[in-house]
Amino acid sequence: MKLNSLAFRLVGGATIWSLAALLAGGVALSSLFRDNVERNFDAHLVLLLDALTAGSEAGGDGAPRLLIPPAEPRFDTPFSGRYWQIARGSEVLLRSRSLWDQGLPPHPASDQAGGVSFHETQGPEDGRLRIAKRVVALPGAEAPFIIEVAGDLAEPEAEVRRFQTLLAWAFGLLGIGLVVAVLIQVHYGLAPLRQLSGNLAAIRAGKAERLDERLPAEIAPLAVEINSLLAQIGQVVERARTQVGNLAHALKTPLSVLANAAGEADGALPEQVRRQTELMRRLVEHQLGRARAAALGGVLGIRTDVAPIVRDIARTLERIHRDRGIAFRVACADRLAFAGEAQDLEEMLGNLLDNAAKWAHRQVGVRAEPLSGKLRILVDDDGPGLDESEREAVLKRGFRLDEKVAGSGLGLDIVGDLVELYDGRLSLARAPEGGLRVELQLPLAE
Image (tube, rainbow, N blue to C red; front, side, top):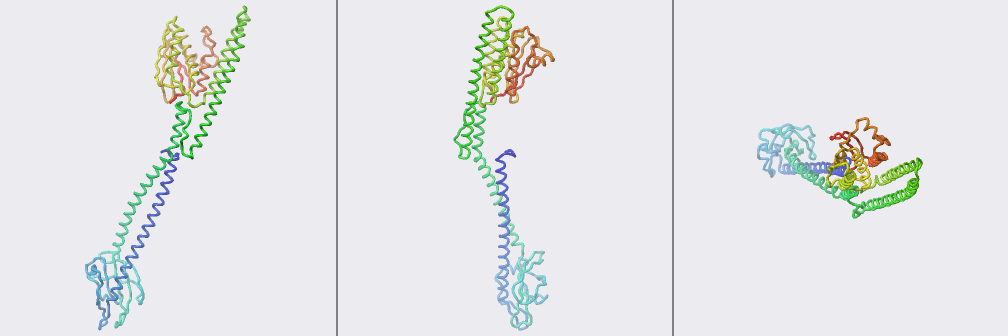
């Protein structure tokens, strides 16, 4: 999942909000549970305090007596976490057995008779105590008594911790489940976009002509518009092909008439007309080829198998140069494909192989292979070759190294133009056999 992808944004946003909501909910639930536990703890202490107050009276000597002990077994167990005592001022008059020989620390709260007050203090064995206190004036007593009931805060804290642990596990698993659910939802929700991307890749590779329009309602209109655009592009290309063909036929006829007329006469002028007419014919073919390639260069779905074209051209040239004994060695994978028009590939390879055969002594080698996402074609000959300065000069448009070799000199220009239109690369080097190596790098069809 890439950082700039829709999936990352959707999953990231949903995860952040989900975790934030879970965290806020967990804090709120924990706080509510703590408040509830503390209220219940205080209510239990008040209940014990009421029972203790109801069961107390003042004796004939004015000292307090406990007629009915509170129904709390922990009051009888030393340091059990539940304690009570009755005091007057700082003097402890009665205490629970759970306090053993200790007393509850005095608190500077008001000793006036009234309601219940709460405070926290340090208790036996360094325990933290919550104390409910009431000042009571018992009948027959000269002064009011302070009745206190205490409980160890470790109990409610332990209960809160257990709840928080359970809450953390529950919300953690819920958070993981939500993230997984978001991932599944995003993966399922973006599946049509991946399908659309795959269909476009198939069209670009020449494996399909239209997008599948059986998509969700939100994306189907996009597929329909893209199909309409592809159909329109196809119509434009077809019209361009037709116009280029018509222009070619329209120009070839007057050129043929001029050539025939010049051929019927003798002399320097008819010969000059014949040469210039042939040159014009080749220039027209060259420029028409460029126009056609420019019209088709950006069209999706063009795919041409390389091996049949290479083998056909090699067989044809081998027959043409049979009297010189030129042999062609071809190495090309059967499934290798060029992302372009077959006519353009034939034009490029035909010119390069024909030039190699003209200069070769005995053999011409052709190898086609994929290289870093490109189609790489190597054409080698065992001819005299070129030095570095000559190779640079040959790559210049319109330059001919040797006027004695038959041809108009436009072959390499045509190849260069076509390579340029396909955003390819043309380079010259020394072949292993000592002659010239021409390297083509062209778009590779998937």
